[in-house]
Length: 548
Ligand code: NAD
Image (tube, rainbow, N blue to C red; front, side, top):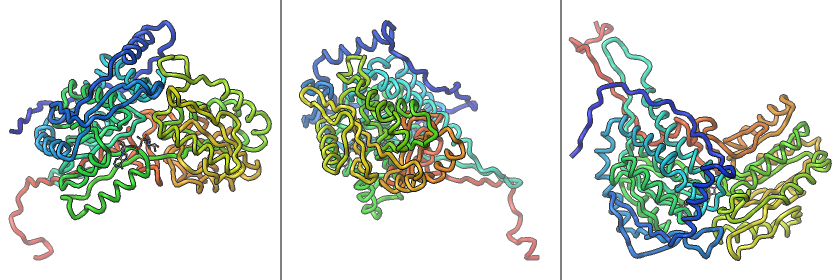
């Protein structure tokens, strides 16, 4: 039975601001508490993660595991995998939960979102950070950006953006008429398929559609099960009703294809690699005759991001920002710097030496030792892929200036690597590596325009990019030449680090549908507006004046 709670008021949201970042500096309470949470997690036995369908735990007995990438002999959690029948049960349950959730007044759904953010910011901050650090190989600062700040921002700004969207109404009413737009949730269910690299993205893939009244079947990444399970539990505690979000880890093609092959499939909310996204889009296209409507496909995918350094740039800023953009979280951000274009004069006159020297000093190690700037890459397959791309680059004539080696005996550690190439179309200038590797191309100082053309045409991606220049005319000229080379453009700043509410995130070309997570725009993708016209004045005849 649908229970509708009446609302007697046009409620105003609390002020929405970005969640303040905590520093975790030595001797602080935050540092001590986070260290304790991390140590406890590392010292504990593996956690058993069930499927959660209609609020109930299911253990299928088909078990997989998530390991600690800093020390892969440690199993962080085991988890039960859904089969096709369980996915079906999840879909049916979600569809049953839909009416009550969709009919809940917006203020109450908003309250659930805001409460979830506060639970994360306070009660569960250390726990969620520890899960993200140990499970996904982030150091404290990177985990704070993600599971401390960004996820709260997604939830709180999300609520604000929905409020803003709901207030977008037809601008005109003829006399005796009231026009309204109702932002209906989609008909059917949303499938959320999340990546390993951001706990916040996983939460956002689920909550963006849910907050506007959709029900969601969620397939988390096998490499982020534990943090994603915690997110699920927090959302439950915040008041998300049973069935509204169904937590179904499992073999990716099985879970995802089962959901895509259902008539009630209404939308895919995906973040991950371009290859997988394309294959899912094709599957969806093949099913068009099956569906009730045209599914909304929203996906943010790979990147091959660049820093373009103009001869007028400050080389010290270039080194600092390039190191942060390339090597933070071991280059496993979709926005991570991968291609560095520098003028030959600047490269020879100190930039190269300074970059090599600074990279050599980078500290790398297990994330429970807070001093390290870098930790492990996520898994064996990532380690192998990164090492093989470095080898390919060497075979093509690329020169490894620093790094180029790794050690996967205990954890999956790849040294921060700088490759110099004389071929701007070489393999590591083109392919997404998703590891701590940048390739530098030193361009002739008098070939700025030619280099921009090459940059623009080297890869299929267009996610993030930066231009470093102290000459504003040149900055704007280069920016215009690179207008379609990225969905995120930074001036004199690194190409990573978008903040919700400040830099809406997304890329174009093969990098995704560019619906801009962290903006009002994305919420329009998960609603199907209904226009309502009501007439207050009854016509007395069907004859128009012109008929007289
Ligand atoms: P991935 O594509 O391997 O996995 C993403 C999700 O898809 C996971 O849940 C995975 O289990 C699932 N999946 C994998 N194979 C599948 C299949 N055959 N059928 C159905 N589902 C399948 O990506 P990842 O390694 O988790 O994340 C890294 C990738 O994500 C990088 O390419 C990165 O650039 C991208 N990314 C993009 C953004 C962005 O905003 N553009 C943000 C984060 C990550």
